[in-house]
Image (cartoon, rainbow, N blue to C red; front, side, top):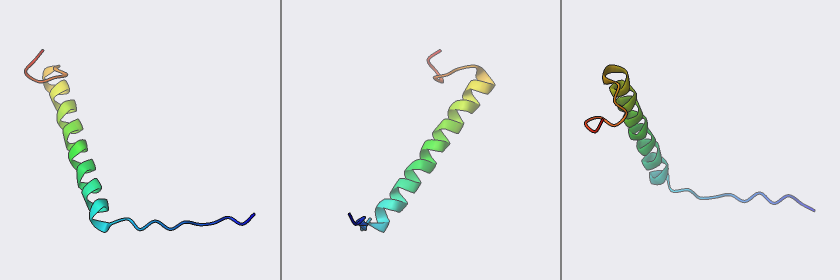
Length: 47
């Protein structure tokens, strides 16, 4: 059997959007960690 390599055509705009989404997600995680370290709150304003 031959191995068939399938090439995917991924839209470059989708790649940049996912990268931006990941950066904003990491920004949110950093804000969560900072709030936990400074105030001891997991959800700021609730507990």
